[in-house]
Length: 208
Image (cartoon, rainbow, N blue to C red; front, side, top):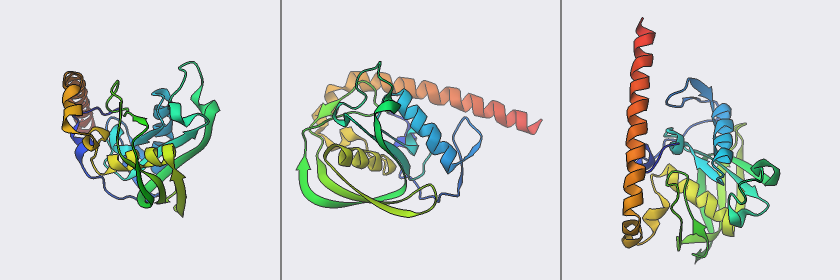
């Protein structure tokens, strides 16, 4: 999981197709379907509702998300298997959002798996949207969503444009979390240093 402070979270992701081969840093080449399956499992382990490709180090326009029976509570009780509460899951390639209701909603609490432990209300999101995307079979699809699910889709699409939920709040909100954000950034730097060492070792092995 890539954390706050990782440069990949601030880059605009590139489009892809369902037939592309992807290489997640630290792993070998995988199909888009294999990556999506891994993302869903990672999301369940972290008790999240969505996960975008940049959050695992991939700068491509792909995210996964689920609708739970009690989605307003996100992960809910830690003892409850999340998969047993899934109503629908989504894998969206190259999502494009169209706003159906311009009225903004600020009532839900929002967090992010890449910014663990920090939650805030007041993030303005469109209440009703339509998302046009490509599925894993390469088919064009459109889904409408409102309220909490619409928020999830907007949050994940933001990730594909290098935008984090704290960016949509007043600067003083981020300042209030400065100490915790610095700790997260340090964890991010440590992870990237270890990843770089691993990649160098793999490169040397390939040359032998």
